Length: 381
Image 1 (cartoon, helix red, strand yellow):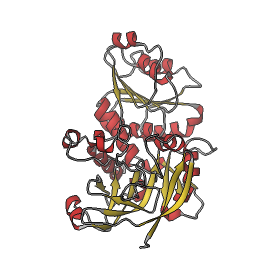
Image 2 (cartoon, one colour):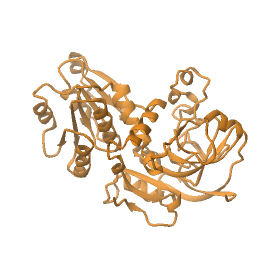
Image 3 (cartoon, rainbow, N blue to C red):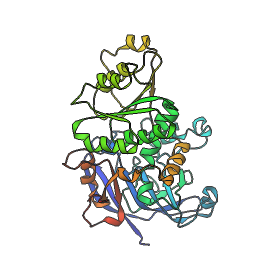
Image 4 (tube, helix red, strand yellow):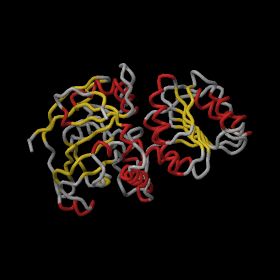
């Protein structure tokens, strides 16, 4: 093992440099992870172009991380039940584990890991490299693991690249099943066939939903085809069909029980469609967007239909475990979500590919330190 670590560092909005860091000192309560795969999602696109103003200095991005324990202190190994050589998925939350949220298992809400309100928060992919440990993101060869890192052992039958899908898949499970409450015989409209939307197709299918409808645009044809392969019953190209008319036609005029909004930068349209497409009474609308404002929000229609709106934010420990179980089961061809691979020296290009700034259509991108110096691109299966 070298004394230095190479990492892709965000040094300014939309700007990355490859830099070297000294290996952090590992004591009895900490460990070092050799990164195998770091996934990229829509949040990375946003954070790359417009970093949070309260996070200063160099940042190693990458919050969907899988790797092998390279070095670990004795107390760390005892606390986590892990040893050198074990492959793990690392959650991006780093809670305090003493507050009320942590004690009830909801460490994702802990102030110690909430970068929105705490400039000193610890969270992989967000924390400045100027903090002790330095290696606080997956876009590098190694990552620092403190005592309170949240780890999940990866089953032997699950490859590192497949385990790189745990974050979007666990989000799909958390949002569709645990937050919204989709269950047996329910009807669902999923808006947006990206990695989150496709993950929710799998979650809803596993839960026994009787009809799963996925909407997208003409550009999403390949993704809509994959949605069918993953279990969607119907797909809608909203540029070719009136989506509300199609939903009502497919449901015999009843509407759906749940609308799960997984669109990105689509404005207020999906939410308005969701309110209209829900059943006459007591449907549920799950939203995960971050609109700053919603002019002329139809509160009257919302209350008349007794609609429940729930927000989707992050995932739980249980959802990650269920995601790993789902990947190990091989019931669904989830490997098809991992469409592109790049070395960590190609972070800038990879993020722009996912952002749609190139002609390539990427669903989920795997960044791999082992591919440094090699040409990356679409995965051939």
